[in-house]
Length: 391
Image 1: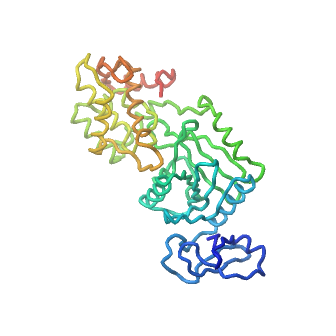
Image 2: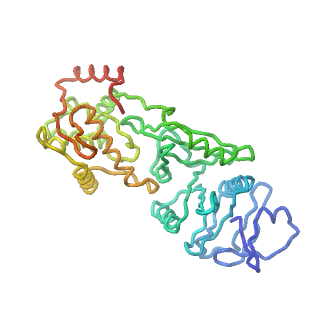
Image 3: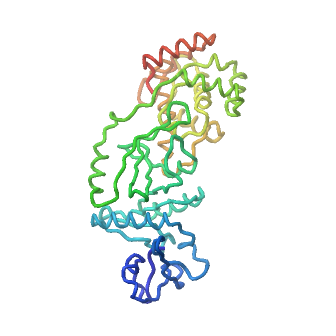
């Protein structure tokens, strides 16, 4: 911990004590009130620690040097900009201690959590709800063990947030270079597990203004983002490879469609179309779209499907685990369900449905099945070259 209290209940910053080593005081844990002492060295950051292990769960021991350094960097950056900031503020009503508590405006306190170690899903959700239910905003920043690559782990997905201007994003802190990295417009590339994003490096010093960052992103245009490539043929080959290598989820999918009279060759184009927010979905993309298309095509041409029916079917599929979302506590259920809404939009563009209002669609025609591999590959190659299919 970087903050202790004195006998007079005054907050004491370990960094200030390090500057005045001759100043001797008794230090106590802000949570359990047990004595603590200043620990410092030539390499390690100065910080307070308990004299012995105890039952203090708020200020736990075993804090990494990365975590201590990161809190110091963030605290210095906020204070340089004269943004009200409290380090390791203990919140008695929550029995929680955010790494930093800042006020970006006069109304809403913001909890900043710099996450350098693993955390259970239950604990992450508990901490997040603890903040939000008491009126705090919360931002999670990831340490070096969880920095973004071209795929997302289940743990990383816990910390993805969504903003109407910059889409899905998450934050990283690089203490060795004093950089904050913002990955934004995070999306899944087609039907693959590969994830793409844009990113921005921010130097955490007096040259970088938070207001300038906010202004930059508030004026960000979605038209400038990198569009995922539309590779239908790659999706087709992905399924074939999965069958050849006996990938369990693809084998299960293949067995299911065989029972319905389909094969990996006959599968209609619509099952391959990438949807927005596929990033949130754990279920094999072809599988849930096939089942949803199956449900729609139980109706005769000319029948009407309403938004309420679509929402109800989505709920049924979720309940039956035919559609599974990743555990992403910072993403709303409404946002996750938009994948289905976008699929309906694609079916409308393909002419399988006709929109008759904002909440009703008429079934127009059955999807086309393919009779052989050559026919399918030829059409997919043509569509990939022409970019007719809108993702």
